[in-house]
Image (cartoon, rainbow, N blue to C red; front, side, top):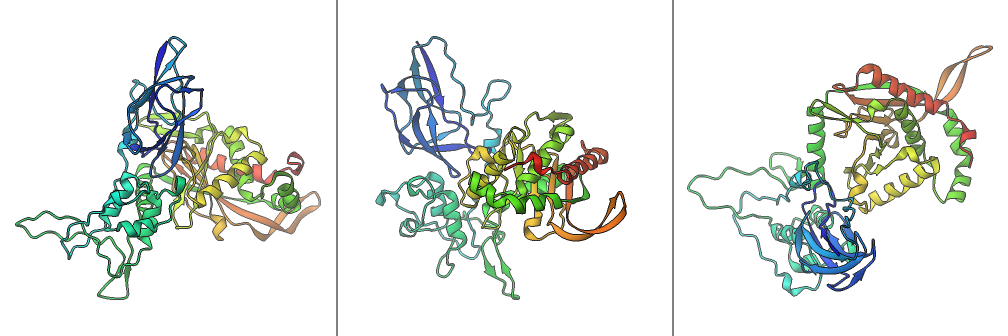
Length: 445
């Protein structure tokens, strides 16, 4: 007989804790390998936790609605196999010294309430005992900080499991909440000194002119910090090439109807771009790296992040894991699935982690080219511009001719600490070569 500890898994790079929504098993119950034991919730995602082994539930240490830190033992299993070691949850990170890695979790950015400097009032207490609806501790805290009444909170449509209100839901509500008659305040301790004015953090109109001040939402603050950090970390260099993608355009126009009928998926240009990037990374693996101090970490997996704009205007980068193991149909299915779920905030934490290279399609917005900022800790990011018809000089056996071709600019920003111009330029040219050499015979539908 042996005992196995079931720990609260790490559900994302910045998740410190999770709430136990429901225990599906009780002490004494038998469970199979990978059978769901409980449901948990964070402010980003709801998840089911499977059993790491076959056995019997020995003890349960927390109740439903308890908030538990990542890495904490929440239950134990008794197995009939001696000295059995269960595989840890893939969401739990363990450092080389055997301790669970909570560094990323410690970097969670706390919710910052809106401050009104001309009023010193106490936050109104919300009595959650008068509702049967589940609210996570952070949602409750935000409601208190923003003086959102229980009646108001009950009207918010939740996108979480069983209609649960997530952090995204309540922050979205706050962003669009009518400001008339609503006062947002925080407790400010009394002092003998004159308090310094706090920065304005809510939408308002300037008294001096026709200017509106709009507060960044939490996601925009994180993006802002990440972009500044990237510029401070990596000396950016951007190289450009122009690619003739006429063969790709003609092939897609010819097969897109049949492709959707056969595979149930729309074929866009993005999967074709990703396929070419993957091939070029195989030729130039030193762009698929990261930097830790004076060490270069060469990544064996090719995980392509694709920057996606959200309806809110913010940006998220879902990741296609092991893209080199997928054919064009497989990449297309992944691209369409991740993009669709990104638009409705249904991505899982692990689906936005562990990217090794990022692609951003600025052509979607009609832009010819761009100079993207590197998505740390990666060292390169490729931007694809819009495809335009242009007169181009072609070399033929009978001499040069001018023809109308579909042309596109590619731009690669790279970290000049570890990617020199020769490597960055050669890699970018290789991506363009693969696009120009696209062979429809190799992509039969």
